[in-house]
Length: 488
Length: 96
Image (cartoon, rainbow over all chains, first blue to last red; front, side):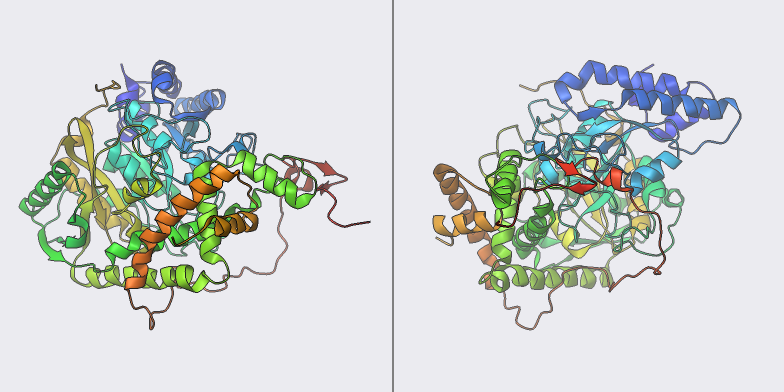
């Protein structure tokens, strides 16, 4: 039985009914890793031994007749920017190649408390900067739907692992689309919760006012189960929202009668693949046939969001990444004095895209340019946020494509950073506004998955789950499994 | 040009990064293209708009001033490139 093809909630039933053991399940996923990892390259570090120990512990609990949580014994992957005590956490950067955190991220503690099994630390664009995993300091991952294409990024290893059966679920992080875009490219469900919904403690910082952890799963039900585990207030993260967390599985309801959908015309602008546009329009027609209403809306500052993001995120990154200086952790290259040591260390071990963003951010924050670029971008951020506030007076959800195209070929955009940035045009405004959004599969173009993005107001995750679940239950897009072939 | 090779060299110094001449030229071209694109921001009049650095209405989140366990010193030092007597060791920073 190919256990690695099932969802977490299906596998939970199999564990509880003792049809399979947690060790059998983990071994099935590890065998799958052995079979396909050379092609997909999802993982930077595998944690096979601890995974089997975690599985044994779950089998012991089942054997004693204890109740187990839904994710107990279910193998998953963590993006390699979440600190794991005793296990390397590299952020796919050579500067952290040997970094072994002395503590766990809060999300890791929460997952451990549920007895989940972790197969390994997933590949990503270095420090989460990129949209293809080609900026990984170690190797690129590949899209299981076509090995010649990218899995997206920056959480590309997490998405590739779930799509290839090398993990049943995964956590990613999303600063400008880094959960939703790879989920779209790999035919999965990926949610960026409301900013502050999930603790960032132990998530290696890229752009702190935008970063948020979220699930990448095979269906909406699994998304709700993972959210239930990771959401909630954390005193260790001062930007964590201090309010109760609902049971998201209660929103797994196949009914959207009366739901008001807004379609922002600015998101359906030039540059979109006609097949993507067709799939989105078809999805909207279907949602209407299921009882939703839609109206066209305008979010006039959308065209400025990308520019604002590429000032704000690099500015925050230039400050956050100042810590990689060869002093307290990470690599060091000796120099003639301390400044020379800083320069040699950072120049030798940081990758080109990371340097580009540090430089851009430093420039935007430097004397003479601070007001013209950084402050202006923050003012535009206010206008982008107001567009969302205004839209949510009239509608319950906003629907857009997740990305303007399906997954692109490896190497296609590596020499043109701006072309790469344009892939984030539909996802970035969501981070600037801090609102939640989910990407779900809504069709295929040339055999490659297309993602539908659903956006809700702050703390509107329940509306997202309900809308996404209704769409999913009336379609079969989530049931296909990636072929793991190179499409010529 | 929005940015020159000289500007980029100065930003590199501020960023504590060093580049070869050809790297500097490549970066200058790429940063120039990005800044050119970002120029769209100047089409907007934002004079009366407050900046948003952060989306949540949070200010000065404090906890009770109570001592709690923290990371033990030996664990905090475990990833240090160089250490001595319980401290991080860095190259000499003062003359004499």
